[in-house]
Structure formats: structure tokens, C-alpha cells
Length: 244
Image (cartoon, rainbow, N blue to C red; front, side, top):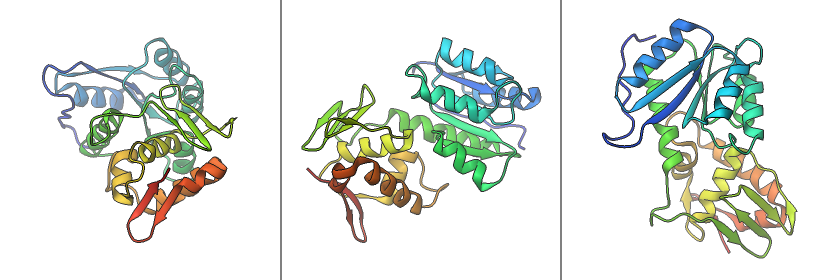
């Protein structure tokens, strides 16, 4: 693991970015903290157990959470599950950090709503890139500079501010990734979005994950949306389009 890395996030004069690092290995936590705070526009708090992570994130939600999985008291997967189920913390971006390398662990973490997954030993430069990507996606808006707060169609009603999705009056529960994917498609409705574009807008990067992941998530989203899922069209050779 690299000993020195500068992570530049907001421009000078921008609001302070608050990051909570949940890591029970103190030397790793301090290394991440030092690296993140070198830019001068980031404040990092650290805790060493899952119960303290839940308490800290609930009491004062950070802009981003870097979460180890192997934690005392409450493990990282349970922390992620708890935070994603609470309205006050469900939108906190989460990057999982762990020594677990099995695909099942990564899939479980991502399905629970984690935004990214970094394995130990890790490169601080790669971690920095992923932090920037997640924060960039969090602040992303449509090309016109406007976002869609509420969409009402024949089958679908989506209140993106309230995180409430209904299909023909029935509440639909989406994962964080599915929700962001639907929001991106609706905000750009009637326009074709390539898989690479969706990776950039929804996942926040275009080089750490395969484009077939987009197809998998679109398939799940369509299934959950029922009749409204037909509004997500596949444009062969190009990508996807949400049509009205």
C-alpha cells in the first residue's frame, strides 16, 4: 500500500467534504485520514467498530462513508444494511474496504447498496479515484443543469426527492443503484444513453466495472417496474432509452 497520496476533491473555497472512515486497524485508518485531508478541503472522522459507525453516521450524516467489512460488534455488511434502511442515512455514498476477495462478498455488498468495493491491500491513488468518482456522481446533474424531482406517467410515478417509486399505485422498492439508474434514464427521457454513459453517470466511473453490469441492472429494474418497465427500451448497438 502506498505511503503518500494527495486526494484533491472540492475546489478551494468549496464547502468542506466530510468523510467517515470505519476501520478497526488504526494504522490503516490514520493513513487514509492523512491522505484524504492533505487537500485541505476534506475533514475525516474515524471510528473502529460497526455500532459506532451507525451512531456517528446517524447523528451527523457524512458526505461519504469508507466502510471496512471485518468490524467488531457489528460487521460492515450489517452497517450498510442498517444505514440503507433509514431515511436519514439511505443516500450516504458508501465505499466498502475489505480483505475479502470472494466475488460473493462483493456482490452482496453492492446488492446491499454500496457504491463501490476496494480490496486490501489497496492503492491510495485508486481509492482516491473511487472517492472522487462517487462524490462526482453524487453531485451530477443533467446536461441542461436541471434535475427531475417528480415524474408522473401512465404507469409510473416517481418522486426522486422523497425516494418514492409507485407503479400503478403500488409502492416499488429499489436498490440504491436501481434508483439512480431509473433517475438517470427519466431525467434523460427520450434520449439514448450508451452503457458507458450510464456507467459514468450512475456508477461514477467507466473503467472499474464491466458494461454488462448495466444490462443486469436494467433487467432487474424492468422486472421490478412491471408494466412501467416497458418504457425502458433497448436500442441495439447503442444503449438504453426511457420513452414516454
